[in-house]
Amino acid sequence: MRMTKGEVTRQKIIEAAAPIFNQRGYAGCSMQDVLDATGLEKGGLYRHFSSKEELAAESFKYATAQAIEFRNRGLEEIPHSITKLRYFVERFVTVTSPIPGGCPLMNTAIDSDDGNPQLRELARKAIEDWKARIAKVVKGGIQRGEIRKDIDARRFANTIFAILEGSLMISRIEGSKNALKDAQITLETMLEGISQPAAPDFAGNGRSNPTSDRKAS
Image (cartoon, rainbow, N blue to C red; front, side, top):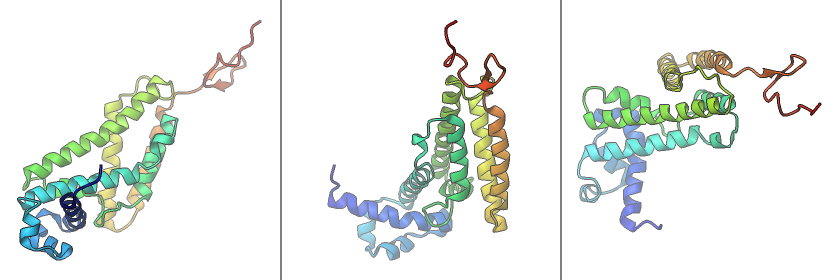
């Protein structure tokens, strides 16, 4: 559906404000900063957003959606769950957020920890959504026999997310990708550990589907 002129203007404001909030944080970004970035008058800005809080919330949702789409691009085309998880980890480590300022989820989670309940709740929901996506891949892998049945999908998703976001924070502080690369190596080992071993055939060779090649005797 084609957007109205007002909707187009509103979207342009969000796109201009998102990197400012992401780089400076909620407290460090003023509405004047947004006015300067968009070229709008104050009345034009408040016609679309009633408050700084509303604009910050919409900017976060936009920035997070952009980061998730960018990092997960091509993920659904990968059939095998372990390969899909490896791809997810690799993209997180190697692909920079499309929104200037780094990962909007990490930035907002830290920035809103005490001062902004609305942003904190949005960050919490975004974290849950991200972990749910990982858990869905793990559950699918268990159902298809690609991942061990004793693996707890929720726990494993929590672990992947915590390792990646934690290493990202360290990398940002250190100004080096070493922590992220170390995390990738560790997660690669973990993924190998949860992979369902191939079942042996009559000769004792590993095979993922031992019945597929059997010949009637």
